Amino acid sequence: MKKRLSLVLVSVFGLTTLLSGCNLFQMDKKSYYEQTIATVSYTAEDSASKNIKITKEDLMQAYSRYGQTLQQNGYSGKDLVDYIVNLLIDQKIVYNEVKDLISAGKITIQNNDRNEMWESTYNNMLGLLQDYEADVIADWKLPQPESSEAENEQKTEYTAYQKQAKIVKVDNDWKIQIIDNTDDTQEDLIYTPLGDMAVQITVEQELDKHIAESNVAKEAQQRYIYDLKQYQKGRGFSTKNEDIWSNEINRVYKEVEQNKYLALYTEYLQKSAAAGQGEYSIVDVNDVLGYLESKVTSNYIKYSVDSSAFNDDILGNRAETFYIKQDADLGEYFYVSHILVKFDENKFKALDESLKNGYISQADYDTRRAQLVSETLAKSYGEPREGYTVEDLYADFSSAMNAAGSTQAKLDVFNDYMYEFNEDTGNKNQDFDYVIGTKNSKMVDEFNEAARALYDNGNGQIGDISGMVESTYGIHILIYLGPVENLFNVTDIDAFSLTNATGDELSALVEKITTTQLSVLNTKTVFDLVYEKLITDNVSILEMLNLSTLKAGTKITTYPSHYSDLY
Image (cartoon, rainbow, N blue to C red; front, side):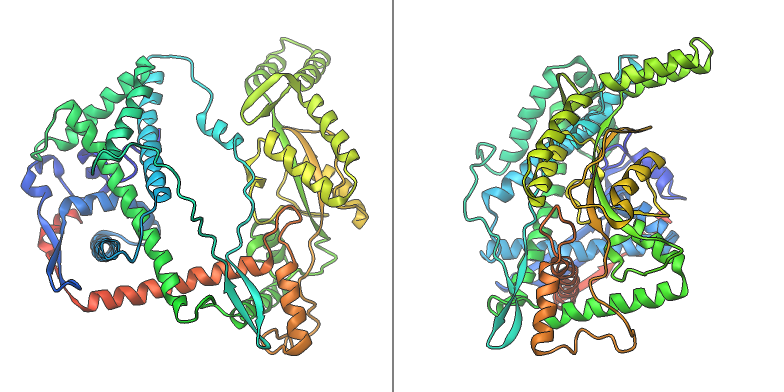
């Protein structure tokens, strides 16, 4: 089962195991939770004095979000708690800044944003409730339903890449122009505006519909509320079922709202930083070329010392591999993708057990297994078509591929079928396709053999497809997508430079990085990949600088004695 109340809240009893040395069983008083651990005082733009109060409960909830990750990064004891306190202070300062910016009209909350917060609140609450439903099903010894997570994975739809920027020439100078993807079309609100509590009220109404349909859901809600009561006990809050439930929805919504506000703040900073340059980005072309130059150089040096490191990176860390080492001992590398139709595990497991226990002969096993394979149904967005087998799928797919006139038409056909029938989410909406080596791979043997046959010692053509390939996972239909090649020819690493290019050489570089796609199946380019990385890093720096500016005008006071029992 997933961690209870995983968005923010954990039970008091759970925290006793998370915070070593903290005996909260004796600390069930309202005053304990409401102890002030830090305050922030500042003067707002309207000259009004403002105060932010951070409580012990805020600290406990923050620990449930960040504690495990921070422990894995080496924090423990006092250092861990102090770090979370400082993190809380920073978050509160920024959050209040965002609220002030919204009040001043500098950040606008659109209907699209409100709908997103509504959906996130509902989905988070439903997910938490379904954790309890899983327990009820197990306790009542009911048949386990098919995994809703797997069904959602099968429903992944193709998302066309949305470019953030493009390189343009302005007065003989190359600049990065920001692409405004803002959609001025406003959505209708999902919920009916009923005042400040509109989202929470309508989320509760929708949850009630889900709960009313099932005795399992009703029991799950009661268990959920019981755990919430244990958490609220002794804290001075209402323990009425309806109040407990409404308060929990409100808690989840406030967390969702805060996350959305912080995301809007990041967008605001990025636009503010670019405002002085008009429509052009704070990242320039030389930044992009400098990043590529440093990556190619570092890769080259790394792989010159350790060839096996290249094999590991190209197979497992493609987005960070900018130099393709030519090494006969390692072989060649190429791209493939596939459509996977999974087997019904229960049927195959039962057959395997029959052979293992001696109930059937090997010949009978082979015959029955072949029959099961031929009867395997292809799933369309998680729902089997009546009698539509994987053999039917392959017949239709191969016919459509043969009818496609051009390579691009074949790729379009593959994309259509992959997003309609593929049960492997690992190759959906990804920057890079699967990489296979002629001598090395991380895929199963049957997949590798079929992929290498398509590669055909370098003679394969993009768009070539395999037959039906059986592995322990199911039936694969592979497509060949071309060799893995270097973006830049490096003959002398000491002389290699991109940032010194001028004139026609620079124009050629711009053309290369803006037209070389990461995959023949999508439009995202090398430039797009690097720009996303650099703009994210730059905005992160802006956020830190802005936070420093905000904190410079504040008075921050911490009270370590109020939380020293937590370490």
